[in-house]
Image (cartoon, rainbow over all chains, first blue to last red; front, side, top):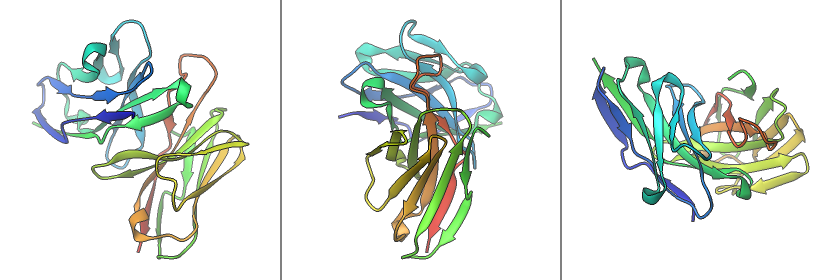
Length: 114
Length: 116
């Protein structure tokens, strides 16, 4: 069965520190992988996506993620966190052969302290 | 994202009432989706539609129904609302045609529904 696991429910980092949010997936077919961010009271905004090719993908707002097939992981990283990065982050997996159904993780809430 | 709009943005209703949430999009996308978001559970798919005549149940369709009135409009109905349907509801769209945004889903701002 398809599933996405985000092991960290909540993370707190200091402004300027590096960040890594973990995502593990279980999917039988070739996965398309996504990271979305949700600011308080807002909808979801796409940060980055992986379809194929280079396993290190760059996104908006200075985020990047690396697809590791052997570990079934797609972790999100940022070298230096800004206070405005405080939000909820969701990893999702989807595939065209299932009608583009998305399966979302439960989310990681990020707090940034000055 | 102004391209996907949801109405109403907030709604409080009572148990047993019928309620409809509406979603419209100007992206020209063929596929539309309804999700609900609950704290600690992430987003779960309720229904999805590939085109006007193709509607499919998602993970948690019980207690919900949908209508795809046109390519640009996809409504979610709760025939008899119950308190555990209190949640944040999101509409999303995607484009089945090949392209750089293929498979990406674009989300509306959400509707916060409270059932008393």
